[in-house]
Amino acid sequence: MIRKTNSDSILGTNCRVSENVIFGTNVKIGNNCEIGRNTILESVLIGDNCRIGDNVILRSVSIGDNCRVEDNSLIGYGTITGHYKAQESQKDKEHVKIDEYKITLGKNVLIRTGVTIYFEATIGNNCWINHNAIVREKARIDDDTSIGSNTIIENNVLIGKRCVIHNHTQVCDGTIIESYVFVGPNVTFTNNSPIGHLRDVPDTIQLTNLRLGCAIGAGATICPGIEIGQEAIVAAGAVVTKDVLPRTIVVGNPARKIKDVDAQSFIKKEIREQYGI
Ligand SMILES: CC(C)(COP(=O)(O)OP(=O)(O)OC[C@H]1O[C@@H](n2cnc3c(N)ncnc32)[C@H](O)[C@@H]1OP(=O)(O)O)[C@@H](O)C(=O)NCCC(=O)NCCS
Image 1 (tube, rainbow, N blue to C red):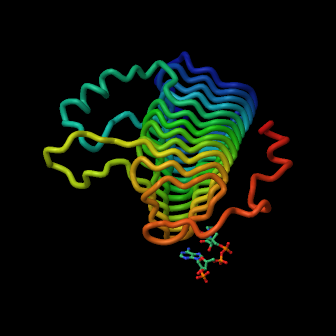
Image 2: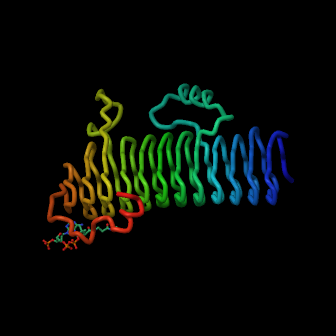
Image 3: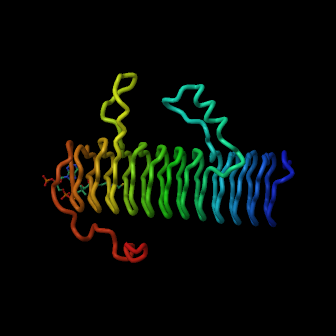
C-alpha cells in the first residue's frame, strides 16, 4: 500500500515504492529510485538513482544523485537536547519550517543503518556516514570524508575534505578539522576546561583546530583549545595539553615531542596534486 497524504508529491520514472510509505508535503523524487517499507517523507528532494531503506525518516532534506540511506536512519532531527529547558526545545521545534530543506546531502553519499542527522547539517559528495553515527546541528562535512560507526559529530563542527574520522570518536562543539586529517578510533575531543556542571563557572568553550593532514592515534584525548599543526602526529593514547607543532610527533601523558615526522608521512604528492594543495 502506498499512502499519499498529499497529492503534490512528484515521483520520477522507474521508481519502486514499497508498502506503507507516507508522503508528506513537498516530496520530489527523481528517476530510478527505491523507497523502502514504512518510510516517512516530509519536504524531501531526492535525486536520481537513490535507494532509501526501510523505516527511514527523511524530513526537510535534499539528497543528491546516487545516494543510499540504509534502514532505520533519521535524517531531519529537529529537537535540541542537552542543556536546553523543555520549553525552549518546544519553541525551537515550532520554529522549524518543514517546507524548507534544512539538511543537504551531496551526490554518492552512503548513510548506513541507524544514523541520525540533525537539522542544518551539510554533508558533501561521496561521504560515508557509518552505522549509528550522529551528526548534530550545523555540522559541516566536506567531500570524500568518512565518519565511523558510533561516532558523534557535535553541533557546529567543521570537517574538511578527504578526512577519516574513525569509530567511537567524540568530536565536540568548537572543533575545526581541516582536510586530509585522520582521527583514530576512540579519540576524545574536549572544549571546556572548568569541568563539571551546575557550577557557577562562565561558559568557556575553547576552539580546537586540527590542521591540514595531521593524524591522531587511537584513544588520544585532546584538551580544550589545542591546535594540532599541519601533518603532525599524535600517538595512540596521548593526552594533548599543549599545541603540537607542525610535522612533529608527540606521545604520552602529558604529550611530549619525541621526534619530527619523516617525509614519508607527509600528505602524498598525488593527493596534493589532485586537490591542488
Ligand atoms: C607515535 C607513533 C606514530 C610512533 O611510531 P614510530 O615513529 O614508529 O616510533 P617508535 O615505535 O620507534 O617509538 C619511538 C618511541 O616512542 C615510544 N612510543 C611510541 N608510541 C607510543 C605511544 N603511543 N605512547 C607512548 N610512547 C610511545 C616508543 O616506546 C619509543 O620509545 P623509546 O625510544 O623509549 O623506545 C606510533 O607509535 C603510534 O602511536 N601510532 C598511532 C597508531 C594508531 O593509533 N593507529 C590508528 C589506526 S586504527
